[in-house]
Image (cartoon, rainbow, N blue to C red):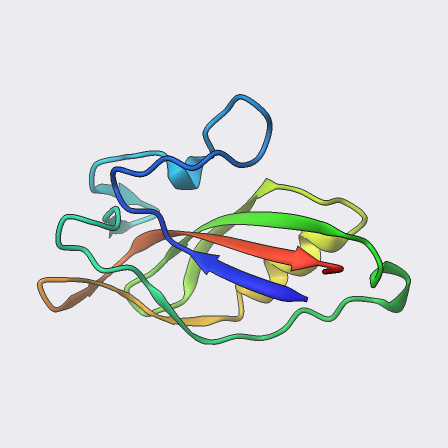
Length: 130
């Protein structure tokens, strides 16, 4: 399994998910309060979160040959943990749940604003069966 961790700069839009729509994690938004924490978009002086520790998902043998790319949108809190995670592009067959549970265990170096840790959105891609 290949893991691709991406972040999107404030002025970049990247299509994913269902045809003809822009996923939540690639929309441009102003700093805002989400679940009690200020969340800042990456760019304009805000650095991106960086993956430090990854727990690889455990894929059952009967699903090992399923190919697909799961896109997970999330918010990395100021403590480097995923606060919110949801599927933006699904694979099905139980792999979406496996991917979501795996990223909730990951640890990131949080985004920085003027040297201080802040919450920021992140876009995570997990490629299964490649």
